[in-house]
Image (cartoon, rainbow, N blue to C red; front, side):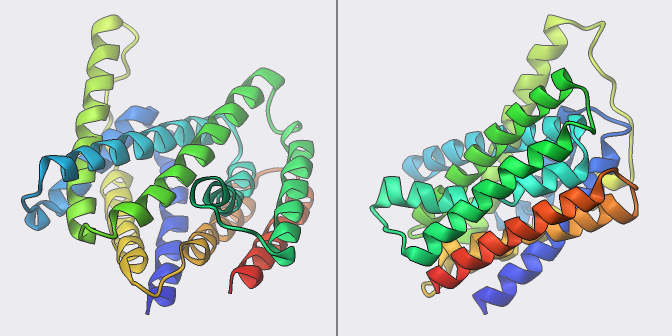
Amino acid sequence: MWLWMSVCSALLLGIYDVAKKQALKRNGVYWILLSATALTAVFLSPCLSAGSLQDHLSLVLKAVLVSTSWVSGLYALKHLPLTTVSTIKASRPMFVVIFSILLFGERLNLLQWLGVAVVMTALFLSSRSKRHDTDKETSAKGMTCMIISVLSGSASALYDKFILQHLEPLFVQSWTNIYITVLLAAVMLVQYLADRQKFEPFHWDWRIPLIAVLITASDMLYFFAVKDPDALLSVISLIRRSSVLITFLFGALMFKEGHIKDKAVDMALMMAGLALLLSGSA
């Protein structure tokens, strides 16, 4: 069951990424995140329940990791083509494996190490195609943000496995979204007070509630999958990252982004590396 929940979560996550890219045309990064997360918190409000101070502090840390990953990821999405972002984002399961080695003492077998090598090669090759899509300064900013997003997202995935050993999925999801909303609102308040003239106004976009619905459903399936005692985090992470196939296809077919042939090779290598990791983790 946890495998099917992971597959459905990946499908919804891919559509969610496409909707975010479109929504950035009307609003800034923080407005998209704040409005969608606030709506998600409202959707999940019936699931709120009491918890200890330690439980809530652990969810505040979770909120910080998620906020960092989301904000940096959306900035990268604004400066880089969707196909480039999707290729780099596909590397996150590799970092989950690496952090598992460093933090939990896990060891990689031959297939897993081969998968890591293939993914790293795909990352190197992806820099070849991205150079043609944006100027050097914008590209450098986008790539920096994307790296931060991948690393913080990987840390969040590992942390999920830890906290879900003693907390219920809906408790984690409902309260985490509240804390993320508070964090983002505080950041936006500081930005507003610092420079009111340059503060971006909010523009209503029908895609915002769609984003909220998609991420609520995707995360719910993900948390319940991770909670399953038989679930393997490495496998779930790999399956969930397969959402990049959806974003890549939308970028190529709908948005007509350039240099698709080169990026398709990068994506194929990336997925081959992830498949090796999956085989080695089975």
